[in-house]
Amino acid sequence: MDLEMEDFESRVNEIELYFQFMEQITATNACIGDLYDVEFEKIKIDSEVKKIFKANLFLLLYNLIESSFKSALVKLIQDINGSNSKYGMLIPEIRKIWFQDKTKFFSEKTPRISGKTVNKLEYYFPIVDDIFEFVLSIPEKPEISGNLDGQSIRKLLEKYGILSEEIKSLKSEKLVKVKSNRNDLAHGDISFSKCGRDLSVPELKEIKDQVINYMRVILNEFNRKIENKYYLIS
Image (cartoon, rainbow, N blue to C red; front, side, top):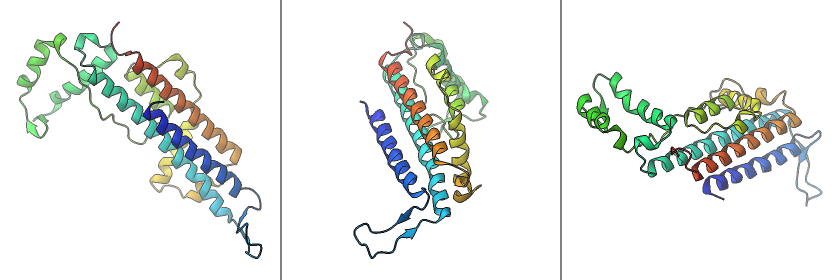
């Protein structure tokens, strides 16, 4: 198992442990106390606390989505860049990513690279003049801004040329709920108690299971594609 999958499974284990605990404390008449001290007064868990625990699951799930996807994408990009492949060796999707990154300087009045002003002609001429011998390197910091769900993940996979039929067929509607609730909580647009107010444990389990299954398939697809060097024209 590679490091990305190990990290993913470790985070999944954290979520499962949290869910089991949440399941117990949100049960009817759940209380806390000292099992070994019969004289210790049992304290019933407040209903507002139960709602907060339910809502917090969205933060854990979104953290799993973003961290695992970003890690897998960076690994892919590093593999592409580390292959020292020339322009004509790579599939169109990767060439487009490279082209988009390089041509962004056209729209800048004073283009700068590493803090230094560059001459557009001097920058682009050697690249275009020897395009098929040019070794490509694409940006290693993909722009992921806290809005990952099934649709945005599929768009990014399509952009990098790894969107498979299996991924297209995966159910992912729960990821939208995770993203929306996570953003609302992170930005303070909703309180934790209000977010968790109408959520049942079975509903949360369904959301949790779909997210974990979806991301596990995504990561396995990344690993297969990287192993097979899919980005090279055969």
